[in-house]
Every structure is written in structure tokens, then in C-alpha cells.
Length: 189
Image (cartoon, helix red, strand yellow):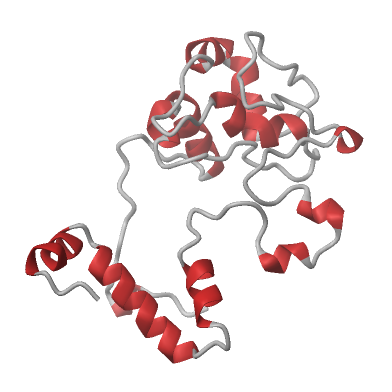
């Protein structure tokens, strides 16, 4: 192991020393038969492909997992197969989710956001794909949108914020979640 103080300090400054230390602690706690394979799996983040556990599942389940976009013509899940947001908003007339409901009433928001991407490359199409591909059920209303990364909430705030607010019964952009740690205020359930 490198004992050069400058190199050790560099690893500490960048957080690598702590990360490796935690990994080694987990490794010796678990004591796997193949330590090298365990370390490779531990540091495989973000994950690539499909995890070993998912590979044990049926193929139709595997298609929707991993790091590849889900495109399945048999299930009519074909919106934006390459992640590129189409110029024209998809037809959401028969969809039942918060995203579709909002965009039907605010087509201008789609027009404003369709050309934007997050710094990590997440597009509007990737965020709304689940709500376009899955039209929903009249008795079960889902959000119809997912954040592809943390920045999705800010880059696509004009869409995410009204959906979050609608889903949670009103939650303004500047709202702060109430926290009450007073034990006497906890209701008996």
C-alpha cells in the first residue's frame, strides 16, 4: 500500500479513503468466499446492466430493469425509445395520471420543457415515459412521472412541482415539511 503522505492526504481530501475504509469494514464483516468478486460488486455504482439477483427472474421482468430504457411493443411501451423528447406532445386524452392531467391543461409547459435536459443528460421524455407508456386505471391514479436524477426536479420544476402538489393535496414550491418531535403530540393509533 502507498504510504506517501501526499498521496494519503489526496485520498482523504477526495473521500476515497473513507469509501475504501467502509468497503473493507463491510468485507471483513461478511467474509465472502471470493473477496475480489465481492469488492468488484461493491464498487459497481452506478450499476451497469442487470444485477445478479434480477438475472434470476423471468425475462419479461428483466426487460424493465437495469440501465437500458424499457421499450416493449407487446406492452405498448414505445414512447421515446431513444430518450429524445418528441416535438409534438403525445396524445394523453385517455391517460389517467397526474402528469397527463396537468399536461392536457398546460400544453405550454410541454413546449417549454421539451428541449431541456439535466446536466446528466436526462430528458423530459425519460421523466414522463412511465406515464405515457402506462395510461393508468380510472380507480388508481399514479404520478405518471419519475425523476431521472436529482436535477430533474429543478430543470423540469414547472411539471414536477404541480404534480407533487396535486399528489400530496397541496404543497407549494416554498413549502417546508413540518417536523414535530414532541412526543405528547403523537396520536395513539
